[in-house]
Amino acid sequence: MVIFVDMDEVIADAYTAHLEIYNQEFNAQVKIEDCFGKEFWQTVPEIHQESIKGHTRRDGFFAGLKVMPDSQEVLEELSKKHEVYIASAAMEFPQSLREKSDWLDAHFPFIPWQNRILCGNKHILKGDVLIDDRSKNLDFFDGRSIMFTSPHNTNVTSFERADTWKDIAEKLL
Amino acid sequence: MVIFVDMDEVIADAYTAHLEIYNQEFNAQVKIEDCFGKEFWQTVPEIHQESIKGHTRRDGFFAGLKVMPDSQEVLEELSKKHEVYIASAAMEFPQSLREKSDWLDAHFPFIPWQNRILCGNKHILKGDVLIDDRSKNLDFFDGRSIMFTSPHNTNVTSFERADTWKDIAEKLL
Image (cartoon, rainbow over all chains, first blue to last red; front, side, top):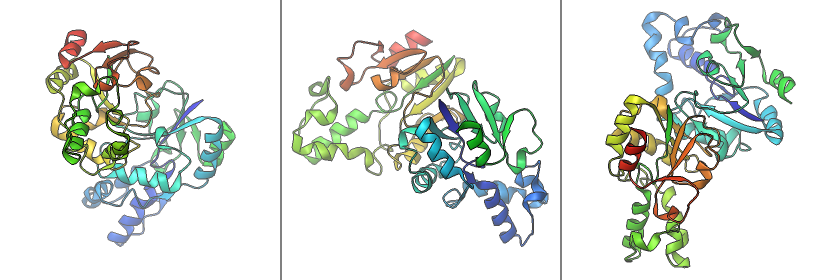
């Protein structure tokens, strides 16, 4: 089985990073619960939104992301039984490409370079399972689309869903 | 129609770059005709081969590649009629990722970031046409595989072939 796994919000915790940077730089106290059903930038005053949209163009943003709980253990097991690819829509952010490659080396060394994909849209992926947090990616996939729960997608009901990596283990291991 | 186009040896002239670097650094006179049917490193004395294999890990190697003749004009026309993606197996060389993105910005600005793919193997591409110089990529493709002629593949007979971008224009425009 060929399984594609997204990076941000699935194995890398970008949402918390946005929140921590914003709270620190604007001396704010936004909590994850405040964000359900919205993009992070939509949860803050309009005057601060451009600053947040710039986070993903900062050097070091992607390098510093925390690993999502249990994703390493479950992906390592999945990789023993299936062809697991990491597929990240990263081409919009050229400074992120090297950071994402290095981040995978550091945290997911059992996913070899042959199985890593940095792309623009994901319409071109051919495989059996796609685990992603975005409807725009899952919509176009021919195989089994699994939405990984993230604050911004809590109101989406059109996909099979996994809330945690333990859920993924139950579904696919 | 979804068309995937490889970078090195198809739109970017890596082979000539290898040859020019080698001739300069080893005061040699290797010509393209000496290379037919071989990887470039196989055309030089064994004692020099490791040096050549290191070219693709040097900063600036990919940034400096020349554009293949007529590839810009033909790809721009193809892009008006079809979904054209650039797909490069670049993940082996992390320092190349940003260089390749910047090189596409400079020479193929009409291919937007949404249509750029940096990957490991190309088994996962879903589309109609793949233009590539490597059997290992063309072999696995479900659609129409077109081998773009490069010195190293002159002896391969198992694929439809294009020798130049004018050939591609005749086939696909």
